[in-house]
Image 1 (tube, rainbow over the protein chains, first blue to last red):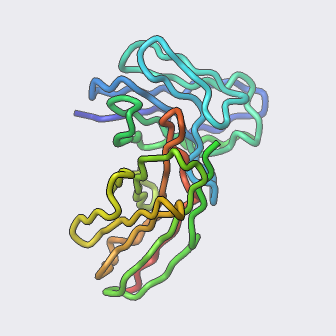
Image 2 (tube, rainbow over the protein chains, first blue to last red; image 1 turned 120 degrees about the vertical axis):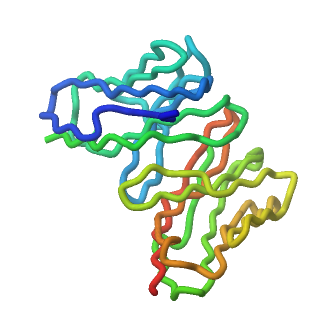
Image 3 (cartoon, rainbow over the protein chains, first blue to last red; image 1 turned 90 degrees about the vertical axis):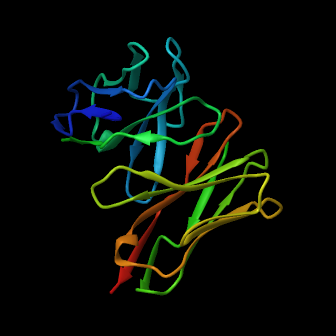
Length: 113
Length: 111
């Protein structure tokens, strides 16, 4: 089992460019999440998907869009990247929303110049 | 919404000493409090969690205590070892069962 895999691991963008972060899990989990991690601010929830076919905004959704492609895959898109979106992005999954363990991917370091 | 404050932001201890990290939360409806450990350059991983129906939980050298009245919970690591060096995050769930994370504590264990 690979767990949660996300790509790419590193990306440098220019302001205004777009990109998509891909995430897939092979644990048959229902719920998936995208977090961003900034120094001193912990992990902040961008968007989540409680189950296949649903997506909802988290704490910091502005500037992002998501797609739950199927039960395994959950992508995060930056339509017009801004320097404030420079961060480390983590995808995570869990069995459901009932308050259980989050399994994280390895992270994607994004720099917007 | 939920607000989680975590202290201290950095903690340096001598190998073998104990380490304590404290968190406070704002939403009295929160009932799930996990702790995640993130080693340098790695993904966060769950090390222990506690639900509101218990006041303390232990797992070998790690323990978590919860005071619902005061809305705070703490992570206790005894007999610290160099491999305990990492960033630790506390979290609490909100009404929608989403986790709000604290800002993190960088623990350094000096050999």
